[in-house]
Image (cartoon, rainbow, N blue to C red; front, top):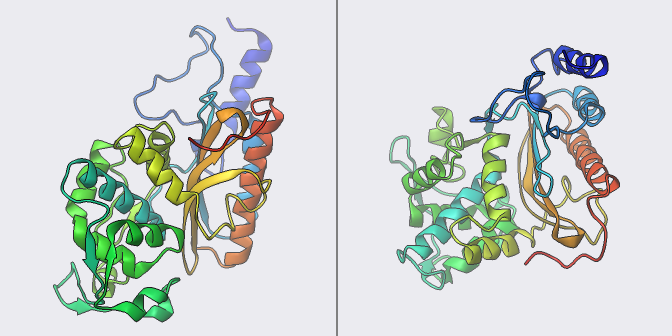
Amino acid sequence: MPPRDMLLSLLIGLSFSSYGQAPSSHAQPPGSSPRSALATPRPDPFLPDSIRKKIDSIFQSQKGSFALAFKDLTTGKSLFVHERESFHAASTMKVPVLIEIYRQAALGRLALSDSVVLKNEFTSIADSSLFHLSPDDDSEQELYQHIGEKRTIHELAYQMITVSSNLATNLLIDKVNPRNITAALQELGAADIHVLRGVEDNAAYQRGMNNTVTAYGLLTIFEKMANRTLVSPAASTAMIRILLDQHYNEIIPARLPADIQVAHKTGWIKGINHDAGIVFLPDNKKYVLVLLSKDTEDDKAAIAAMAAVSAILYQYVTASGQSTGTHPGPR
């Protein structure tokens, strides 16, 4: 029989319910064995309940739905909240596009130096009708002034990630084909991420043909990238360097010290705000964090809430003695 305090702790953990559901933050990732009081004692792979409760309280203070996936790549400790719930991907789908570009480059199907002619005409996956992007709805407008000119795949990939260019994204999706992105995601163990189409395909949107992600799926690909096993060590490093230049830093990095580097991708549309990436700490330590939201009524408040969650996780990792010393930057 386990000691009384161990049994009490187990009962408390089992009785806690987040958002009226079984706590997904203590759910076992697929393929792992369920924990048992009779099992050989081992370090708890999850963060303390006190951290989870702080985060639950922040999410519950907001109207809308939230998901979180966190993994410390040094200790293996993790935290999950609604990690398998599906969310409209918004611009987080641009990360799988980036991965497919580097995968095809590794296979010799394209070169990052290859040129692409800039155009603003795309075919809907719903009915093969043509549609165009409006610069007014894009976070990057400069490319629209150069239709008919050429840009390299690398230049477009950089703008797709760092300034979230929709025009660059659609040009690259046409280049690599969404079916190839889907196949790559399945091979990576992130089959619950679905990249069906380019941006602003309204005919497809009206038929519910949308790009979707889960927090667990995004964590899966960012963990592989952080471990330099995504495509290749060199490709992983190259993708990280692009993600480090992200211009939109209102969520994960917002309340972290200025010298902490975050390789990440945001995504937003009305009522939806996401951020996902890798946080690099001193002494080559790092963790992956994914924060997703939907159906929020106050975008600014939701963003602030997720930034607060990011700060809590950073403070936990650093306060627990896992990060000290001089920051060498990602390698």
